[in-house]
Structure formats: C-alpha cells, structure tokens
Amino acid sequence: MTVLNFIFYFLEAVAALSAISIIFIRNVFYGALLLITCLLALAGIYVLAFAEFIAVTQILIYAGGILVIIIFGIMLTSKISGKSLMVEHTNLFSGVLAGLTFLGLLLYFISSQKFNPFSTAKPTPEKSIQAFGTGLMTDFILPFEIAGLLLLVALIGAAVVASSIKSKNS
Amino acid sequence: MFQLQHFLYLGALLFSVGLIIIITKRNAIMVLLGIELMLNASNLNLVAFNQINPATIDGQFFSLFVIIVAVCEAAVGLALVLRVYHEHKTSVPDELHELKE
Image (cartoon, rainbow over all chains, first blue to last red; front, side, top):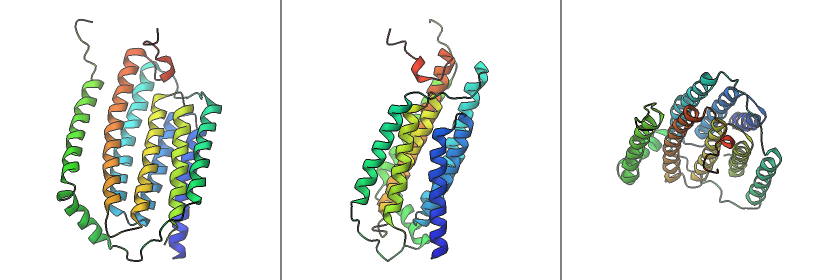
C-alpha cells in the first residue's frame, strides 16, 4: 500500500510541476513536450483511480493524437516566417492574479467540504471494461453516435478550413 | 485508498495553471495548450468522483466524451490557427484587430 501511495504522490508531483513550468517556459515546443509529460502522469493517476479505459484513451488520443497535431501546428507556423518559437508574456499581473485567486477559492472550498468515503468494493478491471462496452452500446448509444457525428463534422471542417484553396473572386 | 481531496487539489491546480497560461501567453498555440490543461483538470475531477460509487461508471463515460470533444476542439482550433497564420502572417491573438477598425 505504501508503494502505491508513493507512486500516486510521485505522479501527482510530476503532473503539477510540469504544468506549472509551462507558465515559465518561453519556447512553444518545450511547452508541448511538458504538456505530454503532464498528460502521461495524469494517465498513470487514472490507472490508480480504477479508470483503466480512460487511461488508455488518454495515452492514445492525447499523447498520440492531440500532441502530434500541436507539434505539427508549431512547425507549420514557425516555418513560414522563419521567426523563432519564442513567446512573449502579456497581462502578466492580471493573469497571475486571476489564476491565484481562482486557485485559492477552489482550495478553500475543497478543503472545507466533507466528502463521502470511498466504498470498499473495488471493481475488477475486466468487469469495468466489460461494463464500459455494454454501456456504450445500450445506455449511452445516443451520445456515442452523436460523438461519431461530431468527429466526422470536425474532421471535414478542419480539412476545409486548413486547406489553402483561395476563392477565385476575392 | 487515496484521499479524494488530493485528486481535487491537483485538478484545481491544473485548472488555475491553464487559466494563467491562457491569459498571459501571447501565442495562439499556447492558448490551446492551456485549454487542454483545463479540460484535463475537469476529467481528473470526473474520474475522482467516480470512485465514490465505483459500481456505476457514469463518471468515466462523462470523461470519455469530454476527451472526444477535446479532440474535435484541438483539431478545429489548430486548423483555424494555421488559416489565420496564412492570411495574416501572425499567430499572436492581440495583433488580429481587423474587426475593430
């Protein structure tokens, strides 16, 4: 149990530190790599929270999909002008003030709440993933189909917006 | 096994860091990174609250659909950033002030 606790706090520290250091980094590419670190640590936390399917989905979609898209975006936008990838900061005082105020409010209200203790019955991984599959096909069939439609619409929309076909009249 | 509060503290921290990144960074791609961080913070909270009643996995379904919407948002957002970069040769949101004049 102590080993699991150690792994849990280690992953939490990795996620928190990599997220915080994105604020101080000026290179966009390093920011994307730090985001990968944070998301992989979060996937480990999901495994410890008995959400194996979400963890695998997180690794596949975020680390494999979104980050590749973001790195493509960084390379494509820096290639055209030849400018460096450095980012300037703006609204530094107001941004940090808003973030810290929000963080303080959240921490105050979370620490003042009493949550129900976890029930002792833990689901086995096989049953959890089986319940996930049957749930997607029975109770959550409508959101599932709508999600498929949304993905199709987003794919077509992104392809149309990013394509460099100029209209003839303008 | 683990305290529920620790999940929630990490989620609050990630959300606030995402907010700070969105406000302070002068680059559209960094703003998208901040939005991803905020979506992940909400996902972490959903997974954590799912542990209170692990017999039903409604929270995990919720976070799965949040991930799907995040994918669509990232794809369309980066396509828009690329398009704006082609048209205006900048990826700084403050320099896009055509509608203001």
